[in-house]
Image (cartoon, rainbow, N blue to C red; front, side, top):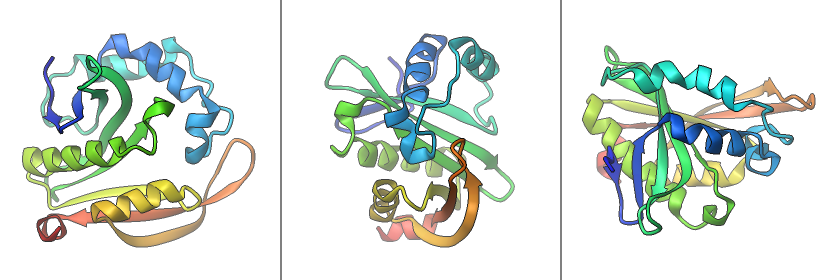
Length: 186
């Protein structure tokens, strides 16, 4: 199995079509998706996800504007446990945005998110010669907020009532960033 990055316990690999059923399971689980504002899940089908990701899976461009990855537990025969993504890759300004989700509940709150993001951030800074990585979270998703702070992300702004979820609840969004200089100081 080819990993683009790996830590002591985790490996990060490209998404495959074989991952679609698992992504559908995670994306449709209201307990997993609640911190992102989808208390009842996202209601997506495997077919919709196949349509969404087939072009990306078949695209070998190493500088694609966005890409999704699967986090695996290297100590459990490479069991998929979550997903990572980068998007809005801007090679002119050397920036991108990232996102993470630990989809297997048994792995949440045990440091897998921290380790996954740590190695993913290093990979992105090195692979794309980035100057800045941005991430955001709903203001009421405190575990994500504190994880990002622990990793060294700095809060840059809060947008009040940024997004209204499917239940009609408005959420504030916290924007954070890490520069290559901040990373070196960590």
